[in-house]
Length: 231
Image (tube, rainbow, N blue to C red; front, side, top):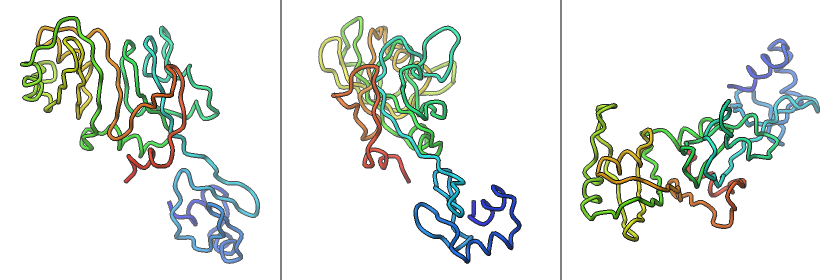
């Protein structure tokens, strides 16, 4: 939204008065005097008028090391959610940029920036996600080829995108996906007659779960990490 329209809506002042304030240098945008009403104002642009703060919401980007037993949801009547793990002043304005099921662990992202989270989650972006998997049975060599070819899901009437399976041990592997279907990893292994016993997300795109971050704790992303998903 343009600054002049933002001011008219926020203050109720007539356009002439808004233009006068701009001309007199009465508007400060992100710490700098702004005289043009054409300046674009976003949700996280700080706007001050004659010393009064009109908008000052700060963008928040968090990495959470999700433990098992918590739902990836903002609220739930039956189970604790990941939001109960947060002690952050902006907690009530945050949403999840992607999900993990209740039994799964690992990297989870939270933000109040809807545009940024869409860059993380939209299928068209094809952001890779890497999971460490433990299984009931030994993982056959044929499994990697089957996952690379894609598995047909009858319920959605679709075939999964090619996935990369790196076998680390007889019952342990890394799986890289570029989509996020409902319980996709477990359904893929079920399709080859195996069962996932543990699922841990290590990476989303270039962003790696901080190995120093204890389970159940979160930290703010740094500028470089935030920039991974900004366009």
